[in-house]
Image 1: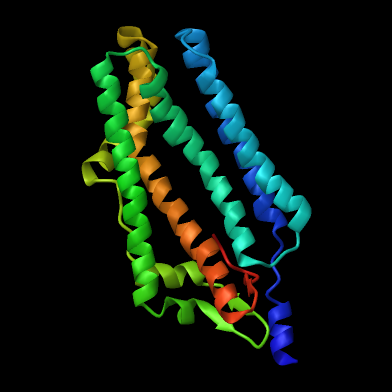
Image 2 (image 1 turned 90 degrees about the horizontal axis):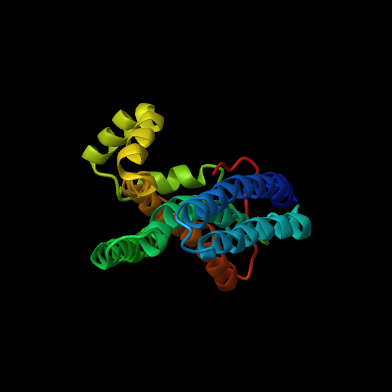
Length: 258
């Protein structure tokens, strides 16, 4: 009976994070659509494909959390919370990684060599960071006792601890795609970004502004890749694997923070 009471207290509604994911998806993807339409359809006049792609991504990133909210608003399943969190992060990557970087090197007018170098470097580093983050985190989980430290095991359920991510951070040192010089440059230029964008657009046109944004924010897109891998592995795949192995649902603690 005591264990049942403890598990009942571990209820955490999906509604708050789902609603946050929906609103964040509307905002971030709205900015991505506006950028894609303004830059590539209005300014460059090269293609309407970028903003159409952004609309499709927006529909996925907004509809998925909304459907989870409507269908599973009161679920305690840890993996479901992970899915909602993942799509929230995908909205941020749609703006920073796709709209800012890849749209520029795919659709903006530029010499073929620059396009190939930009796409090759960006795609290669993104794929490398995705694979590296995945292997590094899964290796840590397999070789450590993270599972027993981060979850409470009951007769009928498994509940993640409230300090789940603190426990993860204590044992796993996540690699940082930012180098020190990049941090200093971003912090130094951030207060002058609006003025700098005007100067770049005056001398180099829209392409100068877009190139500057793509170059400065690309490390942030790699960081988002790492965070999405972190959520995908620890909040989705690990709970699903544990449910199959122990034949028990993996639930979220009431005060778990993301």
